[in-house]
Length: 275
Image (cartoon, rainbow, N blue to C red; front, side, top):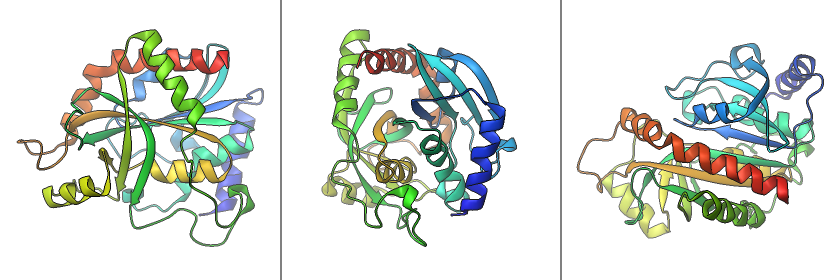
C-alpha cells in the first residue's frame, strides 16, 4: 500500500471539494452505479484524475467520486470499485476508505453483486451482510503497519455494525423492499467458483459469494468506521445454476433490480439521518 499516493489523493479531493464534510461513504459495486442518481450531487471527480485510483476495469462500475447529499447527510459516493484481481495492489482498493477516514466520515456502506448459495436466495434479492469469510488468500493490512488502521492486530468480532444492520431492517419495512441477512464469502476472482468450491463454502457457512467488499470492510472496521454491507443477489452460484455464469447476467439482474436498490438505499439514508 503506497501511503504517499494515498495522501496525494486526499489532498487532491480536498482541493476539488474544499467545502466537503462527508459524514458517511457509499461504495457502489457491480451494477449499483446508477444509485448515485438518487443523491443531490454537489460535485463529481472521475477516478482517472485521482492519484492511485484510476479507471475501473470492470463493466458496471462508472468510475466516479460523487460528492452528494441525501436526507441531509453529506456523502462521498464511490461510483464503482477497484478489485484485487485487477493486479494493481491494495492502494486503489484502500483509497476510498482512506479518503473517508481522513475527511472525518464515521460510517460507510459497501454494496456488491453476489452469487446466491443459500437455497432461498434468488436473483434480485437484497442481503444485508452480517459477517464475512475471507478466502481471497490475502489481507490488505499485510506489510508495514500504519496507525490509520488502528492497532496492528485489529479485532474483527463485529465488522458489520449492528446499528446499521438494524437500520437496514427498518428501511426494508418502511419502503417495502424485502431484505434478508447472511454471510458473504469473498474469493479472489476473476474466475467464477467451481461447484465443488460452492459445496465446500456452503459447509463453511457462506450464504453468498463474490470477489470484493471484504478488503474494504476489514480496513474500515480497523479504522473505526461503522460498516454496513448489502449484496444484490444476481445469480445462483455454480452448481446451483443450470446455466454458465457470466458478468452479463450480473449486470442484467442489477439493471432489473435498480428500482428496489435505489428505493432501499434512499430509505436507509433517511433512517441514518433520524438516528
